[in-house]
Image (cartoon, rainbow, N blue to C red):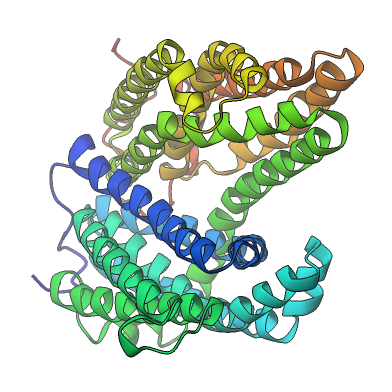
Length: 469
């Protein structure tokens, strides 16, 4: 149903249910993981170095596309709060601006990747045949990275309206098409040219282009009018300022976390044993299944909290946030305990090295504490973002990531000689400490002050005590 774009209309559903929002996003994340896995799998049958080349190229892309996080984070916050406040026209204006900003920044990143692909890849450490393969791939995929930027914008708009199933179905279709094109173009089956790495790149670009077209059509049929972009005249400078106000801190928090993990990886590569490096790699690949539920529940909670805060329903927003947190924590703890019980069979899927299995088995027990803290952060930071409180998590990340996570990893793993066990203790300490800070913040009332000033007045005239959950 198309929107009327009247301020009084509200396209957002009156009831936003946690699991109805969360499960499609979880499936979508799994499909995106599978999408990258298929590329690597097909190319590994073509040439092992080609698979390494794609992995290297994707590392370069992930670093430069952090800029997209600025606009996607802000767009989600602004649209949900405007919808919650019943300001439909403002939400449409933000949607139009989000698409435009993603497109133009995507084009800028595409130009950078095309013109400077070789220096970027050399800086990462690519050389020889790996450099050749990764440059071929990056010249095509990087040149059209703006398609991924627009995909992010469109998916974010649908999610902000509570429509999480549509992006999931589109991603599923993209997976099927990408797999088919990979199989045809990389080895050259059924009379198609044998394109190798370039075939995987072309398949990725075609898949993303069709994904953009489908989501754009669905946007104009289900959410917005085709005249959506008229709201950009005159250009909404104040909205642009809000994008940076909410987007930069959120992106910085993610960037600081990823950078700290990169430094920790460097510590592992330079200071720990090969066996410890292998064990860390396998554990991280297994435990992603433990917290992918928390990521999707956190994203769903952000949507719900944004709508409730926009409507001024702070008590309900707090209760919904804690409900999401308790749900995610229960799932994460059950998954982690199952992982502990099945740790030897799980690790044996990847290796039969007795030393690696023994080392990784011990880490699985420590990982229970890490997942407790990580789940807390994934959900409650998402809730704070939904409320517009983006500065506090970033400030905590600056302190905790670098003092406890990075500093603690070096002291415990290297100086104290505890190896991978010391590394995991430091990681768990960082997650749990930040998690405690997020709980205290969400229990308080200061996050209320971050709400957009122009949304509907609060349903609560005073800061009365919250009821018990």
